[in-house]
Length: 192
Image 1 (cartoon, rainbow, N blue to C red):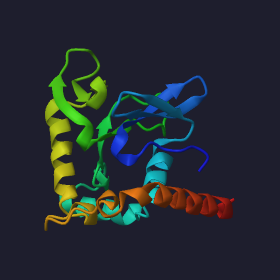
Image 2: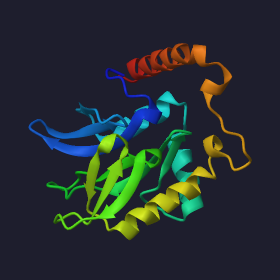
Image 3: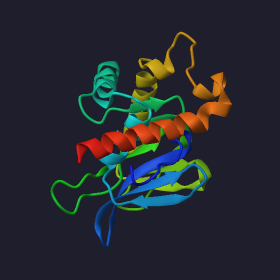
Image 4: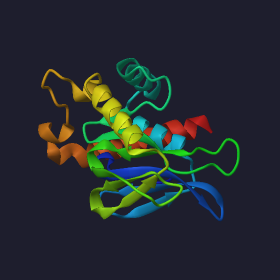
């Protein structure tokens, strides 16, 4: 990976963005900082899953089973990062994505707006106001799906076990993160 991602629990939103160079991705952290990446959202999500040794296809299948949604499933990647899909833009070109992700845990509130063409505003940690094209009930439905999916994934077990490496040995977290990055770099190099 040529670009380091924010810690999963610090990610507030991952959004598609048009720029002078084309379709890019904007990553907003919970403290309000924004980082732009030249890769698409799918790549960012794949990298996040890879960094957590998570099978993204299996996670989507499990979330789909829990929510009964065949598309736009929530993605509970870690105990602090549950990505909820939201429609944030109208695509300019066929094939461009219109859906971004917000971290369930970064949401402070969802409010109605009269700011056309948007129908709702999601208030995120860090004071970020994210206008979305969906209505408040649609956003709330996707948040409910995220809560359902959380209870049917290994990271968010309903039996009371809350898996978080920081609980076991916080002093080795940086070493584990670096180890995962090295493994990801090796895998990326072998795919070239």
